[in-house]
Length: 371
Image (cartoon, rainbow, N blue to C red; front, side, top):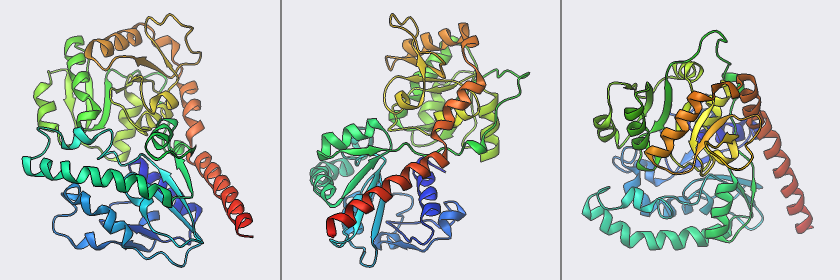
């Protein structure tokens, strides 16, 4: 499951009588906890090829979310990375939005998704027209939310920038019980990437770095840039495609370290690999600054104690190579049990307790306001 689905699964467990409203749903695509709920979909569900080309229908997303009738609920929780926060609720209904990010398609990643060379000229021309409308809708619909929760301080800052709203930060959950420490007598012999193949993931700099270093790299994932990325690889780089859960855990446990060259709003994978006691080598920007206790190669300032990873400060091949070389020379400063303990701070039970406590608090505030 992706991070947003893991959040939704926890919400379903916290509020077992709840219903789910979503733009579209592919039966069997999510966990049984979610599948067993009453799920309402929008008119987009009936559109041709919607599941394969859903971004093509992006201009219709606001209309679709506003088409739902939400009348008999005291509390609405929207889990939003695009338009879910725009749901229209009655005045008496409390609306709390758990924001994974403001609509990335039209804000900071607009050119990543719709820039020159990414789509056909017709799609790019239309999106140039619709993007302005979508940005205005995104900002205006934020006023429909009574309280924002963000998945990271990184996202909270963007909510403040785009919506002029403050957000309570509650980090997404990682089920640490699913992950175990590696065999003490077995040291990994490869580095690992687990990622979708999207431009902003910057897998290209990792391939270039490991091509020059000659160290073994295993890449798990797939996506829109698969052909381009594979064409760059040398013999020391191995592609496996997406892997099932148990196999993925084995790759986590048996790697030297995770390579994380992109910028994520939060990033679940670095926490999953830390739950297996393995360090993370990451670009020092975005969510990893909140989830990885990183050291900096050649840092002049005092280094962190109890490190769980290594940070590189420039999103370049050379900067990543220096971080990997530093790790190779300083493996002894990383302790698997300590790294695991760090990940447990983000466990799903911690998330559920924090989330429920906050919802209970704002419900009381709502009741006091009404009375």
